[in-house]
Image (cartoon, rainbow, N blue to C red; front, side):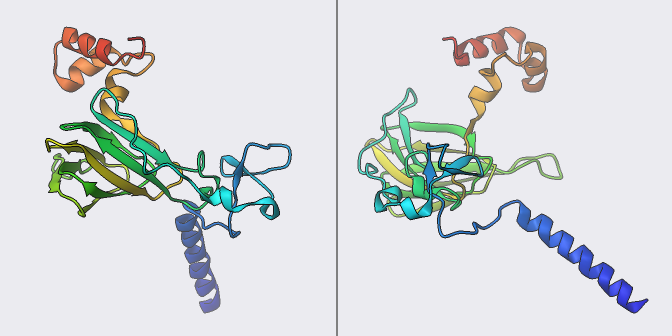
Length: 225
């Protein structure tokens, strides 16, 4: 009887451990260089991998983070280094990005559903913040900080966050992300620019705004404009 109880407990423990580690497994090889050659590649976690004997040093090299990212309409730009442009990153669970800001440039509230972000300021003064998930009391706490050159700030995985250059000169930052494919959900685009559009009645009630205001916002974020 005692042995059967011990065996049952060990079985439950092993099942629990397998569930914990199944969400983010460690690679079982030194590297798995991504390739577009589907005839000779092996399919692993969303990408094909070339024969490791055919890998070259160039597969592990990216050049260009010294060049600023093109700026968008909000005065900011992001250059992401992932397995799409650095094949040797595939299966290693990391990526990196350069972020450029014009004076008062903004990276609007967004989330990375699959990654924590470590944000490092190289030059400039940047106001950053993130918001917690829904708390037990129904609130969402905001954490903010003004960062200067050399400062590092962490945005926990999946939480809404933003970065704003509050200086009169351009700013530069680098981010490390704990996923080779962190993903980005820009809150305003997702809510007001979804295709097809989210029902106006839903958004009007959720944001407690007149339906005409919702329609105006949807027109601004529609991909058709």
